[in-house]
Length: 412
Ligand code: ADE
Image (tube, rainbow, N blue to C red; front, side, top):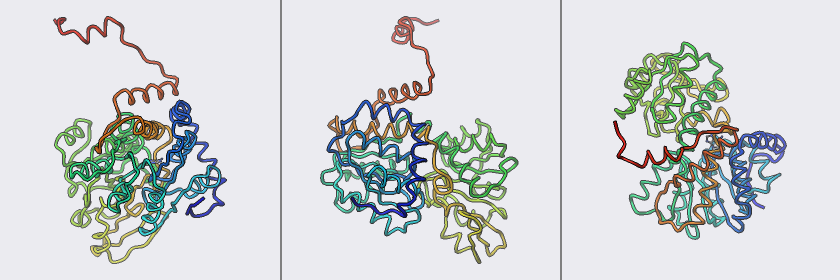
């Protein structure tokens, strides 16, 4: 068995955390029982955040018969105790170490592709793009993608006609983005900021860049805790949505002058750019919740600074030449996964049930080399199972109501 992890002795802590998360991932368990042995002989390579929730997905796939290799989808998000428990107690070949440099990060991706997978699971599209760039797609029959940023990259590949195997955009299932992106990112981003800084949220001016489902979730939670929330957007409809949801809306450069905390959640680069850094109020806290560490212009931050120092775990203080201080959290990487534990298991249950089902779907359908969304019925099935696991019942349409919805004759 091959693996590259930090310390095998962390396994006993990791297994307890995996089991704890497993208590909240009932849908995933129901699916893996339904499809027991359906993945016999299938090799899967996964490039995901190495968390307790991911561990439960990997275990579900293994219990269905697959052999799995796992590497990290971000150099800083790996939970070393989880990596260790997966190796020691579940015989999973894991290649991930928290804090690995870029070279090691890509060596680990290489190890996952060297495994000659039939299916790839990805979060951010680094594994899929590496496979394409390095001609390692032979034998791969399909892949999945977890996040908005990855789906955008893969759709660009589709547009350029270079996609060599079909991809299921897990992110685009409603049972994923409506819950994971909104409630998962909303809570875990605040969690990451609090663990890093231990500041009081009430009374703070919190600026959120981007009002997609992630931004919406963060705004909702910050407002609920008593912050004054400002939204920045480039999309007029989302900006209006934010305004009528009760938030102030303004450009980043204005907002940063009064911000206590700025959180980026756009998926784009240099959203907080050099000019914004120069305008920032003294003592502003900057955090990113987007997939890549490109949203805050870190290069400019270093250039504008006279000195910098790590003052707490996951907090760097930059002393700018204009005598102001800026505090950067989690090195500008995903604050929820770097300084907290990522989304809670309850929402990852639905996201990873979509991942799990996508594997079954790829194996049972003839797909073209395109980016697909899982069918409506699958989304409904996952939602129904989640409701069942929560003990929640809902109403059914009566025959009369069904007929009414189909007819057009009845009116005023
Ligand atoms: N992405 C966000 N939260 C996550 C988690 N807990 N596990 C894996 N991927 C995640």
